[in-house]
Length: 139
View 1 (cartoon, rainbow, N blue to C red):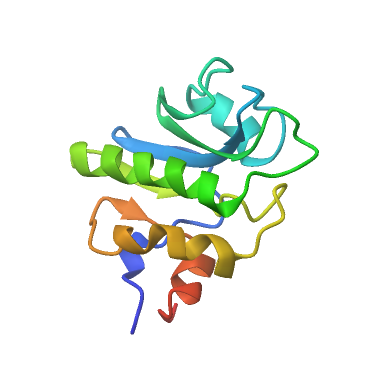
View 2: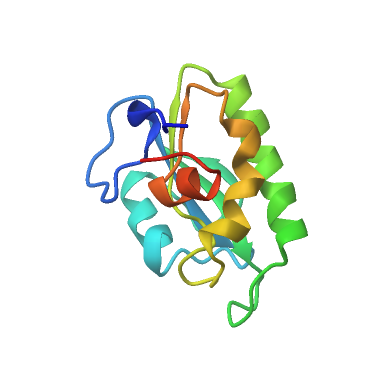
């Protein structure tokens, strides 16, 4: 199957339109100091919000307070499910998901993408091309 082109998160995000939400991997220690989390500060990510919505951002923890390790997929899955419910309740917003968990947390897209399978029918959620491919969609 072909991934819907309008729902592939751009590889580099430098600006957001109104109603666009930058979704990034965070840590439970409330620090947004590296990777996409650092970039998210530009659009309102707050240190006091390690999970959920803040400004034009949505944080999904992939690391615990001790950022030298990573959360297990079961724990990340719980946060992803909270995100999916938020996306369903906010159809007016477009959520641009980055490849959470695939950078500093060290997971592969094949590990994380299945957690987002129920986003496929959600027109307001874009996924990175690596996630679409891991879900058996062509780019």
